[in-house]
Image 1 (tube, rainbow, N blue to C red):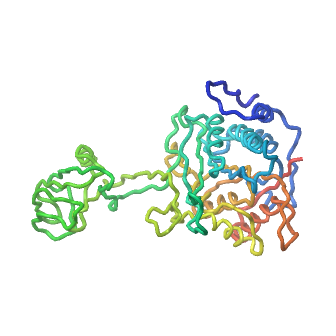
Image 2 (image 1 turned 180 degrees about the vertical axis):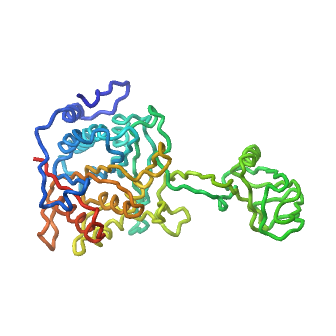
Image 3 (image 1 turned 90 degrees about the horizontal axis):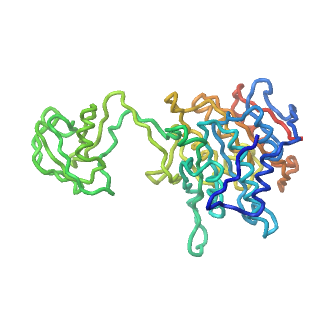
Length: 440
């Protein structure tokens, strides 16, 4: 069965070798997966998988057992730079596009109907990557382009612009066709005493509140003005037993309209004023919950009030901590440009099961550019956080890699497998393990 047809449109993103890449993705493979039990851990009791081999062959072999069963894919592909992706100059872009294209074509077939893919990418190829993803997944299934603040450390002055951000493209398998909703949720809040109605970017609005609609934490009495320039009290308000006895109006930059206020009051929403500034806040009715969506910009500076945290109160950290994550497990070894565990675990923690109305915690995560196996560690850490049953499938080509101080590891696969092995042993969780296979 062919994966898809080459799209014939008035505008089509194309490059030298695209049709050949499409045909390669659709062609059968004569390879198979050979078990490597001597490299594995807890073989008989694990569903985690590590595959040594070219990702095109590995993905084709995975289709037999995993087509339509992968809930999430995260990849951090080699970027198209002189350092990270080596081809003859005139073929470099074409080869990079072809490599990504055929992998995504097969990877899409592995995704479940409610599946989602996250792709880390930098400025060099974000435009090409988005064009390829629009074709493979459909532009209608684009979810967002996260902007990841990768550093707060700046060296010498750069010419014109200093790059302190990368991107994470996010696409769904069937966002529109299946009317899929609530794929990504950052947190669930059950009470909003700390949800102000003030929004500095909005226009001034006058809101009127009927008697006993607002609770006060200030002394009973009659008030004619506020202690804040942001809130203007338009008529006196009498507070008795902690509630407003009369109608009163406030002028401020509100995120709600008068119509919205009245609608919320009918639903049981109350309002709270804690101080004489009259900064009014919404207090939702009992048992009401609200799902908070992730913000497009992933901030990493903890001094920033908008710093991104997952629902387990772990902050997303900069790319510099990726090396620290690796070295904390691998001790004397280091690795170039690994992503921080916190970024990947944050993205995976967003996945929401809208049918069961709960965070998803039992699904497969695929990474077919595994590198140092950061994704595997992120999956295992998330399971430790919420007792989940997420499983990983890592795929990595056994490319040579030399540590200057040690010859123990010959390939990137050796490094990734050892990282997983050490993390599991350090966690002392008897349920963890992984099976290693080799494409032959």
